[in-house]
Image 1 (cartoon, rainbow, N blue to C red):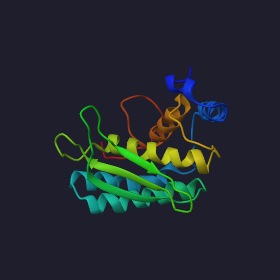
Image 2 (image 1 turned 60 degrees about the vertical axis):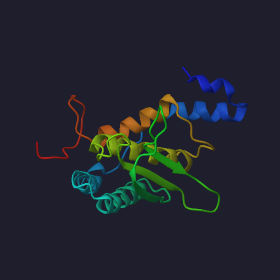
Image 3 (image 1 turned 45 degrees about the horizontal axis):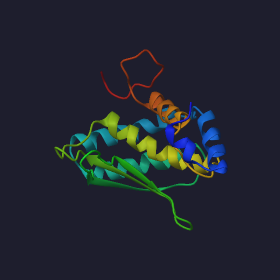
Image 4 (image 1 turned 90 degrees about the vertical axis):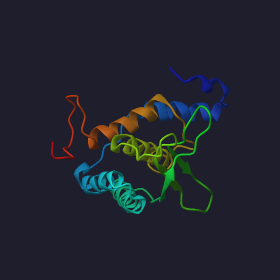
Length: 175
């Protein structure tokens, strides 16, 4: 069932929305190749070291996009999340004609200015990279928040992040 904004889309956008909604996963050929970068992100977040997190995010994105054989993005890790009275911005994907797309993620909460948890940060990074994959891997003309989009994001997270559930996963930490 489409989200409410679907009714406000034009015919071409609705077709793109439906195509996006039908794509429910992204298979990583070698998820284990991303674990060193993911662990470096964890270490950087724990140390509240934005430079280290930035390096690790660049490595993570470059490895993942190369693995999927899609063009690269620029990445930027920023400090405190921008916020309004009712929301915080966690990440942003920007695409401009003639420029390399940019993925921005914020590593500290707006309210307490504390580094976010690895799972939250990684989900945000994967979310922004999914916007890029919509254009470059799935050849969509736009990127919408569809149920399929969120399932793709979750499929990537399940391949990379430990969880309490019984889903197939890679071990990231010594537990």
